[in-house]
Image: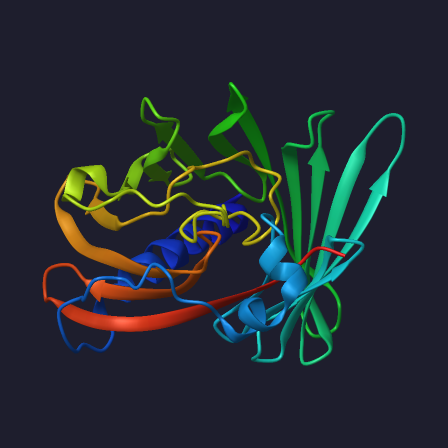
Length: 282
């Protein structure tokens, strides 16, 4: 029991540190207005992509997404880490298995169990040491309301909890993190444009929140927002703002983001730039 508590506490602590560490990166100037008609070379040179109103995301920075029959087959993170997906289904269940390797060595395996609507209801996670022995064997159970994820609760080797709250437009506005004793660790607040005097931008990517412990690119957790996030604020357990970010986007002709610039909201400084690329479905 003690070893299980230590594993859970360390995992929760690592997550909190990862979230808060983003406020310590490099800086430059105040954001400029986004060029909303920018085109990537891939979409501008591919006539099929130009005619399509639905595009498949293929690159996010150094990360490359590969597809088979328009299903996500693998994600190469460009640093030796690769995640490969296999899909199984029957009359009783559907599931997706994501196997992650680092420099060819298996590090973890995640099984997503889906309901009839294609939403993930349970996530089984295992991590392995260099000999292939299981280090962590945890699960998360997911609860939905009107098709939107509202709770993610740990089981087995996991005991933490996450809660998701939406506004009247169905957009994720609060993501709350709790430790293994279900005490609040911190919370993330998302804003989409109307509250920061900037235009709302439709979110055709619908990428999952980077702050949540879910798959980065699988769209099996419902829709978190139909608008792109324009600001993000992190509060500690006492309600004090620890850091904030603002995002400016460049879009292609079909309103898909081709670039995101991240700014430190309080130091008025550029923290980083991520480019996105797409292709037309087969």
